[in-house]
Length: 314
Image 1 (cartoon, rainbow, N blue to C red):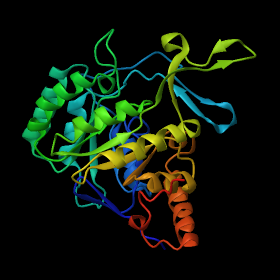
Image 2 (tube, rainbow, N blue to C red):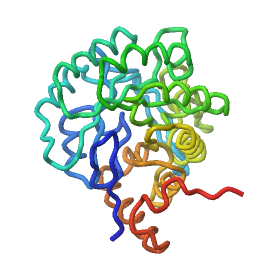
Image 3 (cartoon, one colour):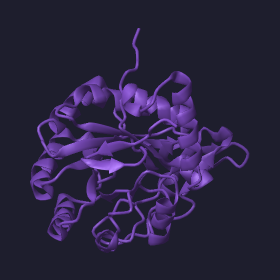
Image 4 (cartoon, helix red, strand yellow):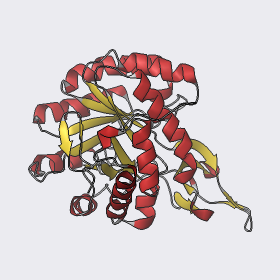
């Protein structure tokens, strides 16, 4: 069988598939399900300083035709101390590395959480989520280049060791250039994860004439197969622009081995699954792994490095 192993931020993954933060990873029993699955690693729900219930239900809905999903979750999580305690008792010899996602509502919150994990001196890998709302009336930090760089100047030295950043989708070449130039300034940024959901879609049921989700008058982030091409573009754009060995984790549109293959071809070193995991359950990892290996075998590839980032252009 083709070799699906990879390394991210200096840690080895037995295979390059894992969950997208936010799906099946809020509670310990869900994290255990990921450990028991065929996923190569796991990432926790994005944690805030204090626990949050999130937005009112319904806040997630699959879209007809298996094209994707819409959600406005509102960062429901157990608070960073819950995930810190989980990280402290995690078995780091189980072969699957642990990624911890942090999404402070302010720079002060992120600073406090990063300091707590630094002081714990654990072998988990931190991922800072810059693709969630920060302050009311302000854009996501990932869309505010000046604020993002200022935050990294504070957080990168605190974290000290290699870490990652979760990004929103970018749609302008200038933004790829600007964001990559910022990330290249920080030696211990090991990878970026792109993309988070495509923001502010509106899904309406035509029969009832009603929005499918309740928060924000029905506005929510789009995920699943319909965001594949946007995700591929972001993966490839950062793969081309990042230097000093910085990597890209792909997220968006993976329903089968085919989309995973395309993400690797675009430059991804690992591939996350979100909407399809929500709909199918953790068995998705075994299925997608098998499909990806079958594609690689048919094309004569023995490992992912043989074709990673080698998409042809006209």
